[in-house]
Amino acid sequence: MEKRKILILLGFIGIVYFLFLLFYIEFILNNYDPISQTISELGARDSKYSFMVNYIGFLVLGIAIMIFSLGFKEEFNHRLNTKISFYFLFIGGFFMSLVGLFPCDSGCVNLTPLSKFHYYVAAVPALLIPLAAIISSFEISKKWGNNWGSLSLLLGIFSVICGPLMFFPSFLSYMGFIERFGLALGIFWIFLITFGLFKESIQKV
Image (tube, rainbow, N blue to C red; front, side, top):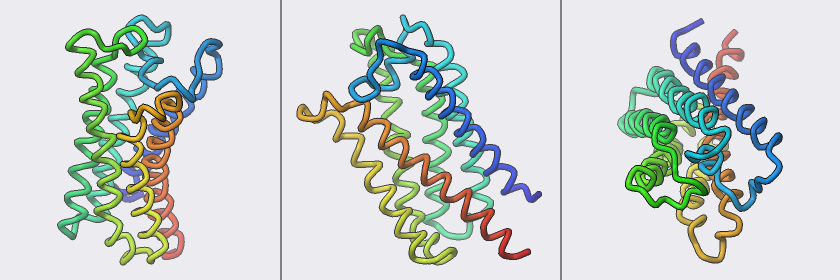
């Protein structure tokens, strides 16, 4: 198997692992509402599952995104916009890992400087990963067709909108849902690239 495929597949597997871990923790918790409560609250300093969410959750997710970005670079590194997308993906993955190293305070009230830093760090991948999808959409259109490029563009736009939207006063009671929806769109874009690459390989056989 080619290097780029291995890197993209490893990144894909790491992200799928994170999703299963997240679903498992949310499933076994009784007093947790994923609609109103953020993922960060699962990893708050006093949370029973803080270690799982942060060190074998967010940390692994960030590493997986960085590995995926290296495969993305191998596949698309012939244009300036996809080079920018690579850097956005890699930096976004790096900061996603940092999210796990700087958990928020109890209930994510963010009273301490380190806890406030958690949200600043979390904002970076929430912005850069969707921007990577938007910036690379033109090259994806050229490579796999307009439908793929349009989907990449839309996923990026709606994902990046979710970041500020979740902090609007009218939507605070849906903060957890909006955060997850934005994250899901970014992850779906990564799945889209993975599927496109392997679909292309199958067609060449």
